[in-house]
Each structure stands twice: as C-alpha cells, then as structure tokens.
Length: 177
Length: 177
Image (cartoon, rainbow over all chains, first blue to last red; front, side, top):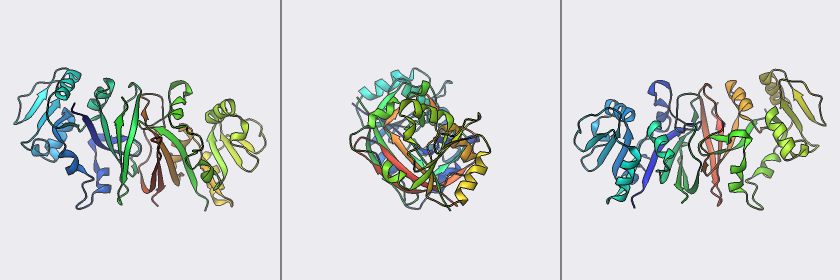
C-alpha cells in the first residue's frame, strides 16, 4: 500500500504562515546547497495532494513547475471546478475517497504539502501515514496554525530527528497502527 | 545574570493538556528510571515560577513537596492573595517586575513550569531565556495550547535535540539576543 506523507515546515510555536500568507520566516534557514532532504524525499513520491490556496500561492510565487514537473500527478483540492492543467487535476469530490483510491493504486508514495485545511481534513479521517515536520527556530507569534483544534487523538512512532547547523530540526514520525 | 528556562512537555500538535486538565498522554512516555534529564535540570535551579492553576493541580495530584522541597523559592503567580506556605509565595504583583528582580539577584537559575497563561505572559515581555520542550509522540487533537496567538516574534538558537527510545524528543533552544 502506498503511504501518504505530510512534509511541511512550521515555526516552533506551530504556525505554517504568518498573517497574510507571510512565509518570510522560512528565509531564516535558507542555505545554499541545503535542501533539508527535499530532493531525496520527492524521489520517493509520484503524486502530490495539496489545497487550492497553497497551490495558488506557489503558482504565483514560484511557478507552475514546482509541483507538476511532468512526472507526477498533482491533485489540488478545491471547492470550485477548474479544468486540468497538464497533470494537475482540480478535485472537488470527497477527499477521503480520493486518498483511499490513490493509496490502493500502484506507484510511488503520495506527498501532502498542506495547507492547514487539507492537513486537518486528512487527520480527521486518519489518512496521514507519515509526518516529516521541519521546525524553524523561531516563535512567530501569530498566523495560520498547522494543527487546528478538534481532531481525533492519534498516537505516533518517532522514526528520527535530524538537526542542521541552521537550527532547523526535522522530525519524522509514522502513525501507530 | 540568572537565566529563566521554560521546561515543559507538549504533544506534537502543541497541547500541554487535553480538555479538563487531562494529562494522561504523558503516560505514553513513562518509563522506570527515565526522568528525561529532569533531576539534572532541577539541580541547576533554585527558584520556580508557575501559574496558580498549575500549582493547584500539582498540589492535588502529586503533593506540596513537588515544588517546595525546602531548598527552593517557589513563586505562584495568582490574582488572589494567599498566605505563604513554607518557601512558596503567592504573588499577585507585576510579573515582569518579579522576573527582572529575580534575574538580577544572585543564586542558581530560574525554572518556569507553566502553565500556558504564565508562559504567554512571559513571552509577551520577552523574558524566557531558554526553552526545553519535550515533544510527546502523539496528536491529542484538542485542549490547552502551549503557545497562544498574538505574541511578539522571537528568533531562537537551537542548542540540541535529544531523542529517547520511548519516542520523546527533547528540544533545547535559547533566545537570540
């Protein structure tokens, strides 16, 4: 069975963005030649699930090829239908059904890049198998939290923690069966 | 100058307690003979600051000697005056003034044991020098968050991360000057 991994960065106080989609705190750990394992991780996946707001932000700030490099299927979860672009599909059906269908298919693993709405919807149905969480050494004080109130309890197993000289600490957990 | 260290445990999703002061998730990492560095840490401090709710909870669940072992000064931050008990003082004055006074005095370091109200009040005035945060391998889903919204931004320096075979990961950060 393919696993679904959330791979995301947060501040120590648990925010994935400051107010107004401000991600400038990620710059604190930018370092030439250091990708914090991102290329190695993306080599293990061929499918990406993400929320529409995150998609539109990346489209605007980085460009369309960040997700859709021609080798992957990208599912953007949205309420409003949009025509597919390349291998990027805009999906407005049932999220749990999509994930179960993808997991039971063949191929490499599945990567969830956020944002918070999708993460919390996936956790609601216990659909995230692994968590790679990069903790940026800052308290940002305010913004959009990775974890919202009112999810089910879920025990985890710690696989590893990696630290980097920029102060980034990267947790890797998997769901306890 | 004496340092003030917050030493506290949270779930991966950032809660220090589940609803109704339920701390049962801490049992997930209980292990005979493993104190996660607590005795070594408390040997470096001679003063404890904590909130009244946390104090009353510990008094009820563990007993009065958990904080006041005869060798330490304990300051319980409260809105309502209470007479001192041994070396435990109930303080209803200005928190920042107390901390500045304690820091400029002599002695070992100062330990803050929570709860969230005191932590956030201290962060409001940038008074926490070091953070030892033990992350319990669980998403509890709901409860009292360690970090509330609306604090100032604060950059941190990662000192170390220790991992334990129970899955607990212990971060140690200090405040960037």
